Each structure stands twice: as C-alpha cells, then as structure tokens.
Length: 446
Image 1 (cartoon, rainbow, N blue to C red):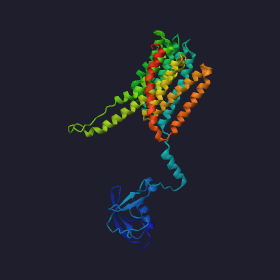
Image 2 (image 1 turned 135 degrees about the vertical axis):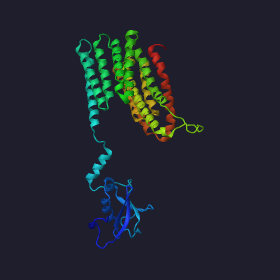
Image 3 (image 1 turned 60 degrees about the vertical axis):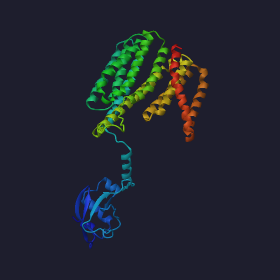
Image 4 (image 1 turned 30 degrees about the vertical axis):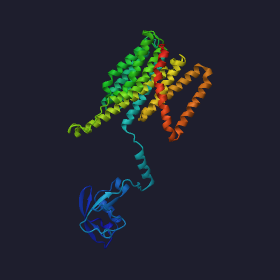
C-alpha cells in the first residue's frame, strides 16, 4: 500500500515496513529518502487516523524499542530497515495545543471551559421560575389573611397544580421535583393558614405546619434520591407546629417558645453532620482477619453505594443547615424584644453557625453556614437599631470592629494561624456551651 504518488518525489525508493495503528498492523511501502514530515500525513490519511486529536497534537512514528523517529529526518537517516515494525501514535497530549487560526482556538477554549446548554437545563430553569412565581403568589395570599374562601381556594389549587407538575417530571425522569414539592407544601400551609380564624402564631400556624409536613411526607416516594432534601422543610414545619401549639394551646409567650425552638434548631444543625457520618457504613480491615473475609469482587458495588449514600447525606446536612438558619432568622425580632438575654442567644447561635464550618470540607456547607450566620447577625443589628435609636452608633462601631477583625484574619501570616486556631477553639466551645443557658434565661427557667 504505497502512499499517493503526489506525495512522493520522483526518484525516491520505497521500503516495505509494518505500521501498527490502534493495535492493527498494516503492511505499507514508505519512501526511504524523504523526511518523515512529508510521509506521516499521507500515511495517516491512508490509515484513517486524521482525527481531532491528531490535528491538535500531531502524529509520530515509534520503533519497537520505543524510540520516537525525528520528523526532519528520513527512514534511512534513522537506520530503519525493510520489514521493521513501526507504531503510529499521538504525540504527547500534555503539549500545547496547535490551531490553524484564531477562530478554532477560541472555539476550542469555549468548548473546554464553558458548559453547553442542554434540554435538561431548560427544564431546571422552568422549574425554578415556576417555584419562584408560585412562592411570590403564596406570599401575597398570606398577606391577604383569613376572611373569605377565595384566598385559601387559590392557594390549594396552586398547590395541586404543583403536585401534578411533580408527577409529570417524575414520569419524565427529570430533575427539580423536590423544589416543586417544597413550594406545594408551602402553598398548602398558606391555604390552611388563611382558612382558619385566630392569632397568626397560634393554631393557624400549627395547622399550616401540620398540613405542610403531611404533604411533604406524602410526596416522598416521588422524589427518589432527592428525598434527603426534604429534611429541611420538614424541620421548618415541625418548628411551626411547636410554635403554634406552645403559644395558643399551652399558653406560653411567643418569645419563650421561639427561644426553645431556636436553641433546638441550632443543636440539630450542629449535630446533623455527625449523625450523617455515623449512619455511613464503614468496613474496618484488621491484619489478623481470616483469608477470604473481604471479597474483592464486592469492592465496586460497595464503593458505588457508599458514594451515593454520602452524597445523599450531604444534601440532608445542607438542607437542615439552611432550614435552621431560616428558623432563627424568623425568631430574631421576637427574641431581640426580650432584652439582653434574647440578643445574646441570637448572637451565640449565629457565631456557632459560622465557627462550626471550620471542620467542614464542602464549599456549599461552608457557604450556607457563614452566610446564614452573617444574615442572622445583620438582622439582629437592624432590629436593635430600629427598635432603639440610641444604639445606632454602638452598633456601627461593633460592625466596624467585626469587619476589621475579619479582614485581619484573612491577611495574617501562616505563623499566626496555629495560635488563632487555638483561640477560636476556645471561643467555639464557650459559644456552644452558652446556647442552652441563654435559652433557659429567656424561657425563665434560670
């Protein structure tokens, strides 16, 4: 199989060799006295090896001993004899890409660095927009309050539509059903909250939490692997039920009930990662185990199942962390109105949420913890400033000091980090220990 005549100069002799490409040997005749830079393209074209990688990285011939032939020299110059076996390979893929023009280079860079839009992204965007619009409508209906049948009927119909959409997405094997279920549970709570007369934080809130939790539990089979994400909304519903029952059925003040709910939510948020870690099965191999105790053929399935389990528990931890931040955020105005005890309780919970992220690896968990803690602190400062005008300047000074401290912590040299870590450990322990006594002070037990 000689290369095309147009690629071979007149007077050049041919040499029979065997070229191996993708483990397939082919007997060809190659020019002896031509540089390989003129021979390899024609050879690659005959062997149908001119792909994207070949045009980007280039091709080369390699001898049986592993020596890469120089493209600027001929076969005779490199002592290749008749009948030798050569291998056609790609050059090093670690080398810099070569492009014919600027347009090709830009297109390749965009393809490598940017994720292409796919039909599943359109579905996810549609689900997000639908949930946002329905949630805004639910907030407007909640603002209407009780007094008629139109408001709860609209909320109930919207909740039913979202459940039907969840069923459709489940049949299509699409993603995002968990967001529709959460929004449907919220609208169901709005429907019952606006259908009952009474104080907004009494039995109306308890009923809304109960119907939301019931709907979340009923929709669990439709969520598949996203079921752990429902833990956060379920925790919010339980907090609503406890608040409503505690204030109206048991007759406790709202601030005392919210102190108990906030402290419990903080404890759940801090303990959930450890509970999730404890629920992951771990196989311990000992040196004196009998032979055959561990089966190598089970490593693949076990590893896949373990990875899936860890990812699901990561979603549970993140959902619970966000839900606890929302619960404490909603409790800030009532707790701040109690006095210094309530303010100290909210501040301790916020600081604990931020410091607990030091032992977390996930970027999403760290972001949720820090952002949640900062939002709680910012809301606390705003509530204090709005309720007590004489505290404006002290709060400004406090916020400035905190900002300077955070900035200094980021620019400190590595030599100061161990000492700072020890101080932070002590502060974290003191803050965690102080949450329960502060909650007891607000409740009136201490």
